[in-house]
Image (tube, rainbow, N blue to C red):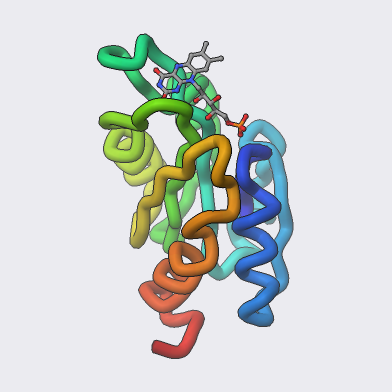
Length: 134
Ligand SMILES: Cc1cc2nc3c(=O)[nH]c(=O)nc-3n(C[C@H](O)[C@H](O)[C@H](O)COP(=O)(O)O)c2cc1C
C-alpha cells in the first residue's frame, strides 16, 4: 500500500484493522518494488484550485506521470479538500489509470474529518480487489 501524507494514517490504520500490513510512502518516493510488493495501493493528495474552478489533485501533473508502472494493480484513489473536491477524484483516477492502475474505489476526505469514512473506503477497495471478505 502506498499513499501520500494526507490522511495516510487513517487509511493505513483502517487496513491494519483488517489485518493487512500497510506501508506508507510519499508519492515521490515510490519505487517499482513498492508497487510490485503491494496487493493494493491507495494513492492520494490534497486538492488545489480556486474553489469553484481549476480544482485539481495537487501536484499530480508532476508526480503521477513519474509513478512506476502500476500494471493493473487495484488502486483506491483519494483526496483531501477544504470546501469541495469538484472533479479532482475523476482527474486523479484518470491519471492513475494512465499509469496502468485498475482504479477500484475513490473517496474524498474533508480536512477536518480525517478519519471519517476511511474504514468503509478501505474495506470497499480491499473487497473489490478480492482482499477482504464481502
Ligand atoms: C493553495 C491552496 C489551494 C487550495 N484550493 C482548494 C480548493 O480549490 N478547493 C478546496 O476544497 N480546498 C482547497 N484547498 C484546501 C486543501 O485542499 C486542504 O487544506 C487540504 O486538503 C488539507 O489536506 P491535509 O490536511 O492533508 O494537508 C487549497 C489549499 C491551498 C493551500
